Structure formats: C-alpha cells, structure tokens
Length: 267
Image (cartoon, rainbow, N blue to C red):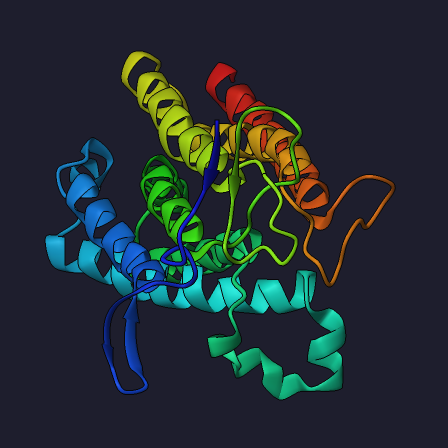
C-alpha cells in the first residue's frame, strides 16, 4: 500500500497567531517529559533513593529535557552533522529555528546532566542512569511520531507495495516510514525489553544502562539502512552514514559497561 500524505505532514502547527506558532513536534518533546515524569514518579528506583517529587521534577524537566536532551542535542547535531557550518559561523549553534537535534548529542547531554545532578544532591549515578534509561523509550516514541508529523527524517525510496509519499520530499517518491520503524523499535520494543529485564532479573546498578545502549545501538544501526541519509552529509564511510558509526560506539560502550557490572556482581 502506497500512501500519499497530505500537506498537513509538513511541519504542522497546532496554533498559529501571526508569526507565533505552536508546533506538534515541540509538543511531543513536552509530552515526553510529562509522561516520563509520571512514569518515574512511582518507580522503584526512585523510591529506593528516597527522591522527592520536586527533585524528580528538576531532574526530568530542567536537567534532562532542557540542559540534557535539547541543549546537548543541539550541540551534538552541530558537531556530528553540521561541523562545517559551525566552524564557518559559530553563531549557527543558536539558529534553533533552522532545526537540527541529535539523539546521540542529547544522550551525551543527559549523561552530563545526570552526573551534575547526582553530585549536587548525593545520589548514586548508576541508579539514576538506570532509572532514566528505562524511561527514555517513552520520549523516543513520541518524538519519532513528531518526526513523522513533520515529514522529516523519512526513509529511503522503496519499490515495494509499502511506502509513504511525503509532501516534504522534493522527489515525491514512495519511501520507507523510517520514523515509524524507529518509534516502534526504540519506543515500544526497547521499553518492553528493559521492563522485563528489570522485573525478572536482579542486576548490578548500571546494567540496565548498558543494555539500553546495546539495544538502541543495534536497532538504530539496522534501521539506518531504511533511512534517507542527511542531504548535506550523505555517506561517511562506505555505505555507512553518521548514525551507524555513532551506534557502533554505543554498542561497544554498552557491552563494556554490561561486562564490568557483571564482573562486579560476580565478585
């Protein structure tokens, strides 16, 4: 089935008043933080650390969403995907209206934010990391839906009977809805996997974080072969884009972390 999407799937807005717009994509980021907060409010790791709801609110909205995901995502995007533009015009880092957020940059930003939060309030870093890791898929699912609504980050052309024609595609070709593939895998499959592991296995603190890095890296690596490379970057190494290269790093780090935590449990 080939579906031609209407013009709505072109950076749609919920509300427009003059030049002021509230976009669906921005709403998915806000909803991500809200649902993550509600999910973690009664989470056993939070209760084991005796974290108050006020501190959880600061962790999710200020440290996680703003400083971690958004600021880190923007810096990461410019470093990984727009370095030439950044070097030629450093102020382009602040041109957020042009778009451009990187998951890998956001992940690094969240790690830095968690580290600062843990030291400031005396929490165990690895417990915080595990708690955040099990909730990240909630945000990933909603943000990928936002990507789909925006008609961005769509997939490569397909000659099968399954595909979407996006209004934002200058070639108007049937393409894989890679945003939906990512949303299903990153947001649902990984969430269920981490939930099951956490519920039925007793692991050292940090193991869930390692498992998240591995599972995300593996899935994203595969889905990248269905996703259209960024027009201004293309392929970086052979038939690999920047995404898979960053995912290989995630898989390696996750494996090392999982092995280290397993050795700590055995000893």
